[in-house]
Length: 208
Image (cartoon, rainbow, N blue to C red; front, side, top):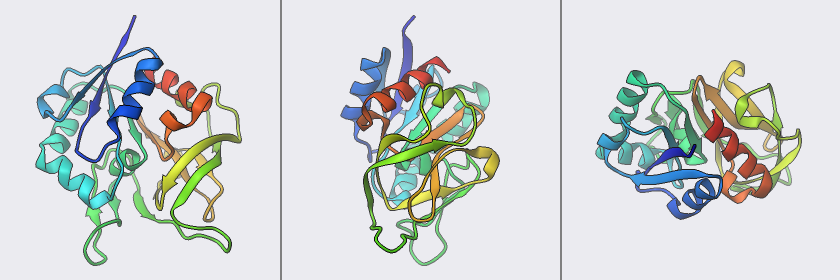
């Protein structure tokens, strides 16, 4: 049975690469910026590149933020945030906001998105392959080995409670590489660019 997935298009997305990866993993993929389409979607993917503030502004301007809240409340289902998409699921984000007040997020995963603090010899943005270390058993990481390499491009990361942290990466003192709150989950890395490991994770999401 083919799994249907709706990619939520908020205007700051690399739609082609994540769409191809989902299709190669067996999903029937649709892309939409119409909030009405969220209610009937079997699974949701929230991708994203760019700043937290702009991402949230786009979600609100298109009516997608309200539609995500209403749709998930009425019909809980798996949602996967990718890179900026994970960050937008948080309660608050610092990136791109005027002053120090930050920007409220979707609030679907507890936590705040803050700038990484690189150690000597480390650079921002954090770009390239790095190891991911699962913190606890979760269907999203079934078959993903501790220390598996995945691909990152980011300067900010989610700080969330321990019970929501699925995986970490040892960079800039360590940061949350994946998080979840019930069926809502997200990864800071790009599974669509992470070869076998990333496709394993995508198939796990489709099986949730």
